[in-house]
Every structure is written in structure tokens, then in C-alpha cells.
Length: 303
Image (cartoon, rainbow, N blue to C red; front, top):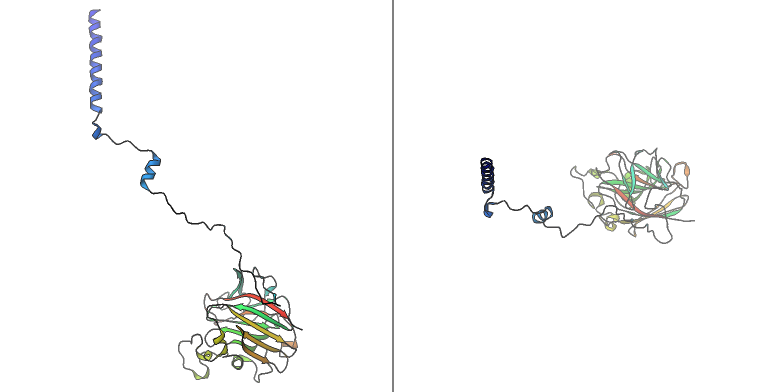
């Protein structure tokens, strides 16, 4: 018994010593111990400063476009939302797939494809009337306002040629129609006698070749419409058409540009009423990415 007791006591002493030794090996001075790991929230706070400005979110915003506004006595024929009351001609010689659409209350028009124009016609026909429209075209693009038009675009046209040597506010025949008031037919040169230069081009009159003239230069140098025009702004166009033998008057920003009296009814088939049309000219009389813009279109029908 005595020997066994001595053995157990010795074993216990040895185990206790070993534990003490192990404890001495694993313990370190406080200066050498790894710092305590902070909580995750505290770590993020230390790494960045919370933002003090939050940008506004415009997701889901929808602002109503400006209301359609026409002068007293006029009735809107464009609602500012869609093309209700209008249609694209599928037989016009300038093209059959022009891109007319409405954006932000504005009627937009451009070629589609590039080189392909066309016309947008009212569903209704008009006889004697006064038309009001505000326009804002990009420089280099040719348009026009067709009066008493056929579906294919034979009409009295008020030129809206906003490009080098272009004519604005002149009256010409369109779509094969020739004006009786001008011997030799309508043509672009005839427009020069009605409110400014015609559509002849930069080399009319033997002018030397070179860069195209800018706004108000070349054939436009003495044009009345140039003085009335507000560049890069909205311009008010007013057109009055009356009579079986048409009398057409054109104002730009309340300045009289053209007062034209035909000597006979030059319309195809002698028609005395027809749709109004807005044109996107076909061919090269357009610049890539260019647009014509129309808004606040109204009409006052006359006896």
C-alpha cells in the first residue's frame, strides 16, 4: 500500500508540473498579445465616413408637357400628345416613311432613312382658313407647308427651306403643280419674287463654287424673313388662304413676308379645299441628325 500511494503522488506531481510548464509556454506579455478584434459595425465606421448628402432620385418622375396654346379665335389641330388627326402620305414623291413623332409636346420630323422624306397630312380638308404654327428647325433642313394638298402632295406650298440659299415664306407650286401667276411655271426661281431667294442653290447667277453660305448670306442677304427670324428660338408662322383663285398671305413673327395672288386656280383638278401638310424634304436637302419641330398648331376657318 505504501508503495502504491507513493507512485500515485509522484504521478500527480508530474502532471501538475507539466500543466504548469505548458501554461508558462503559451502565456505572453500583454505588450506582445494580438489586439482584440473590434465588432464589425465599429470596423465599418472606422473605414468610411457616412455620407451627409443623398442625391435626389428621379426614377418614376413624369412631368406634363407645356399645354397647347394658340391665338384667340384659333382651334388646335395638334394635341401635343400624339398624331391623332394626322397621317403620313404613302404616295408622296419625297418618301413614304418619314419619321414624325411627338416628344415633350413638340411634333418632331426627320428623314427616315437618311435621304427619305415625306409629308404629314391633316385628316380633315380646309378651304378658306388662317393657319398658325410655331417652328424651330435645325439649320440645313428643308421643309414646307402644303395648302389644299392632295394625298400625294400636289399643293400650293409655303416654303420653309431653312438651309443655305433657302427661301422661307415664299409661295410655289408643289408636286407637279404650276402656278398660273408665273409664266414658265412655279419652280424654285419663281419663289425669289415672293419673300426671298428661291431654292436654286449656292451657284445661282454664276456664283463661284465654294463653302455654302451661312444663315443670312448668299441669296438670303436681303430677304425680309431673315430680319424677322429668331435663330435658335421658336418662330411664329401665320398663313392665310382664301378664294377659289387663291390669295395667300404669309407672316413670320408678325412681319409680312408674302402677299401672293394667283391669276387662276392652279390646283390639280381645280380643287378648292384639301388637307394641310407638313413636309420633310427628301434627298440631300437635310443634314444627318437634323430635325424640324412644330408646336401650337391652330386653325381659324374663314367664310
